[in-house]
Image (cartoon, rainbow, N blue to C red; front, side):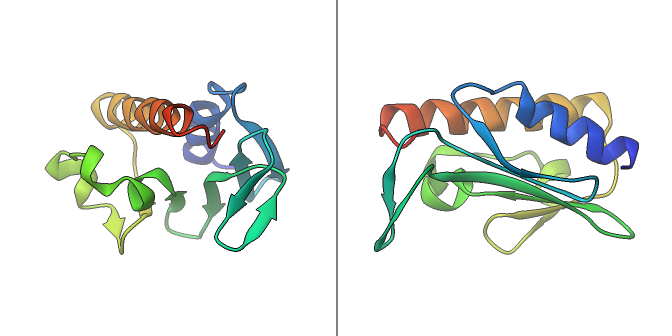
Length: 119
């Protein structure tokens, strides 16, 4: 586990509860809600929220709220440069400002999902 992966996993772990860890290893982590919900056409035991995957050059943060509630997020240019596609961030470093922005983004995702009774 790299220091960057640990910092990002700690940000997600700060939100337990209402999130719970579905999977965790030194190279990946997945968090979801605690309520049974429909996700697409399937009933799941916890609505998917985010995951981390350690890669050789970065840590991938897959953040589902930015996909499901895209209009509720505005990213700084520094964080936006890590965004690849609609919901995957390729995080290569984490200075204090970026860490704070990711923490706030995660908290906003929690608020939105709680409002919609997803988690």
